Image (cartoon, rainbow, N blue to C red; front, side):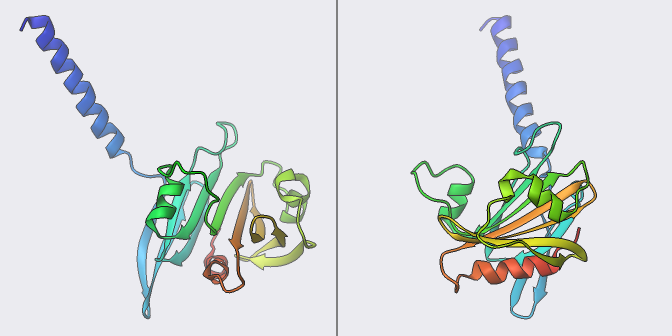
Length: 195
């Protein structure tokens, strides 16, 4: 082997190994921060300082985080919580290539709210949330005024919108049957939400 070939191989190995360590050394933006024992159930806590929220959720749910849903000018956080099964993980992580409907679950989205609109106004101005089966009802969530409404599509759904400063927090759940545990899990998340 000549010197140029050896140098090229060494450089290629350094780039590959360095890239591997660089990609694997990145800390996730937010991960469950603690496991809390509550009687016989285990509860996880999700916390994200950048987007200003934390909440508890049952350990039987898988949490998938997306931070690439927004634009550089308007960042957005999207969290998906679904029953922790291999199939649901494959769907959310893009490994399932078979066409199918998504699983029922819970979503938590944090949008920019640069005008700092209250939840009642934000819902009226954002076209993604103006279609609902029921009239919006005002409630309190995390010690803030919020708006909730139900909707129907592929699944039945409920959405809660709460704003704080320049952020709008949109939490939704879907279900197929009133007995689905996503409904009670959703209420537990709302009750533990801190913003």
